[in-house]
Image (cartoon, rainbow, N blue to C red):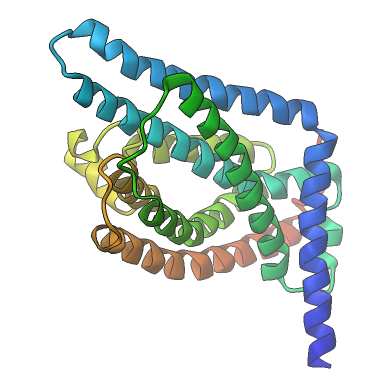
Length: 278
């Protein structure tokens, strides 16, 4: 009986991954537009780094290279983490718009299976798309990554997945709370995370209240650890504090996200907010 239950959950998990893949195929033109947007955004930041040398000719080439790499790492990571965050958050809204959310919520499976399928596809798809953007950036700016430590960067990125999933699940509640403005609320939340996490600057330049907010954001530690590994070649031991913080945040955020989602689902069913509109 247990094996049958686990087999059913596994098939449901694969089914949600397949559904997300089919949605990407259906709206492939929009996916291309967003890919182009990510490429343009990263290239703009890279050219900004190049332009600093034109503004002040006394800055050494080594400093310019490090600054450009600092900015590019921030832009690339934001493109990846922001995309995964948004994909998870928008998945529920897409289901409601497609008119399938009520059937999904009535299906005989655990909610964690449903959300895990969405998260797994978003993480893999986001990684592949960001890798393509990264290769384009290397070609365009002839980046020298000889001193980078890929092992340290990979460990930090793996640790960042857990809290990222938790935040994505929390954000996916917004379309349930407000069917009309849920997507806009998600964009506002995404902008706030961008402001306080130090994507393009150290958070030490922020006012103290914003620094405090930045210190409770997983993206801050992901950026710190990945930049230390790629820009400065930090060994694994140096990024372990960031990894430890990310794991602790993930352990807290995932169950909190599932609890909040469960409460929002119950409220949406009680108030009849699952019906498609538009």
